[in-house]
Each structure stands twice: as C-alpha cells, then as structure tokens.
Image 1 (spheres, rainbow, N blue to C red):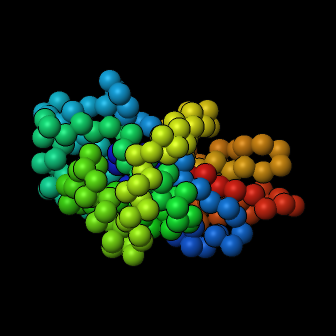
Image 2: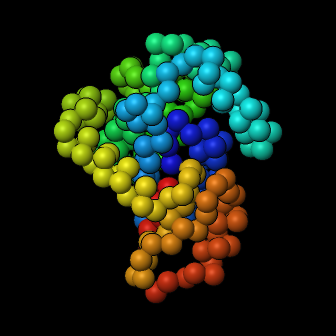
Length: 208
C-alpha cells in the first residue's frame, strides 16, 4: 500500500474487515510501497489536480468513501510536496512501536488527509492521530525520523517493489514463498474465499 494511494484509502474498510476477521489466523503487516519519492513526488498544483480528479470521481463511485473538499484544496497547494517518505516512515515507526495497532493508525491517518486535507509533511498530523488512537506520542517523536526507521522504510519500499505490481496489493507468505492473492481493490469476502482454497499446514502472514 501507499499512504498517498487513493485506492488504498478507498479500500481501508475492506482491509479493516479482513484484519478483524483473520487476525487470529494470520500474521499481518503493512508494507508501504513508496509510490511517490524524491524527484517523482508531485507538488500540489493544477497539473496534479487534473490528474487525480477523474480517479477521485471513480473512487468515490466505486467505494463510496468520502473525499473531502479540503483534500482538493490541498492538492492544489504548491507548497505541499506529496512525498510518500514521511507518512511511510510514520507507519513503519508505529508498526515497530505498537504492532498491529498500525492498522487503525493508518486508516485514521489516511482519512485525515483524504477527508480533512491534513498534510503529511508536518509532525502535528501524526501526533493528532496518535492522540486519537490513544498511543504514546513521545516514543514516536523520538523514533519516526531516526536512521533506523529510515532504513526499515527503504527496506519496505524494496520488498514492495519486488512483490507488488500496483496498489493496493495483498501478498500471502507461506512455506513455499510469496504469492500475490489480490491486485487492486478487494472485498474481505473475496479474499477469504481465496484464502480458504490455499489453507496451509503452518501459520502464514499477509502483507498489505
């Protein structure tokens, strides 16, 4: 997944349902993919608005998720660099510090941007989400910009590039290796039906 990916945001409800239903059967992790990095990260303006708006309309029709007017305003702000780096490091930091609470954190974080137009390039956005999720922000503030988290995040980008062909994507890991079980938006029922046909003898993991 990627925190700037609108289809990942639109698929959050299905991912939450899947996690709630299967968390006792599978190990889950979030694997940020680094969709927009460095010189490939777009800056807010008319060009990126024109690119994103048709997808936003399709996304809203498909998923029924809310894309707020503040987000439309945000993507026109030329001071906003839409880099995946900082939100991905935040997700990795929360996953390392708080384990599977990263799923509710990520869902809330993406809603803050896509509904309320909150920026991913300021720390307050993350601190507000941590507070809402009742997670200790002091540990996070010391950790999320550390070299350790940066390296873990770069490793996540590398793994995602090897496994995923696009976002969102679900990857099943088992004793025979890795298997992409879903490319693109999905429903929890759809994925569970696929998994029921792939029951393994040992506990496996799912990366999103």
